[in-house]
Length: 314
Image (cartoon, rainbow, N blue to C red):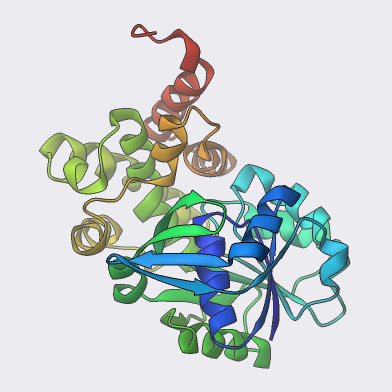
């Protein structure tokens, strides 16, 4: 397959490197030409367990250089999705599929709107890594291998392209499964991830350290209960046990994990709370509900974002 990955952070470089090693023509689409040049010169370097491997996807800051692809994968921050989709238009042909493995609500809709297409694959991955420089990724090998990436066509069905994508990821060392209920998968992921990400951001705790605390588990459970009620009213069923599943999955694969929202706060950057807690609140209000726990967490995150330079220890 010819694959473009828009957003060459840790996840984009890791997936792009593995897919290129497996024989696919992979393009990493970056914002800065200097970063693209560095990757083209040195390759993507994946470090796992002290062992480094160099892989050779192509890199560019110009989508027109890539041309039309079979699959364009979005791995940008959710607040950049619409702009990234507009940027990707030169790579989209009549048979191109788009795929999002991003956090939060609203990414699929933004991609469909900007690209004027409904050929969108939604997916969830628990694979993780840390970007140490352009193309240099420390891989969380346990998370990559232990919990499969799950993908499904947003509008239902199982096209040959979906099956081809699943097989390509699997063969590249990214264990992948197909779901026929992507919207249920989305809401289960919001239930499992959103509250944990927000609370780790506010407490600056790793996932395991947060969920070892009775208070941490109680607060996360309260926020998840609101998500489940919103999903139920939207007709999304089968989400029972999401809190227990989230704790179990985090205990196995993410105990030492620093969530992306916490990483953004530690770096003094904008977070994805708009597609997480804030989006849950918007969905709740559309259903005639309130979501006070999610609203409180979201407001606190926004306060933190707006006052990085005014904290008491500055």
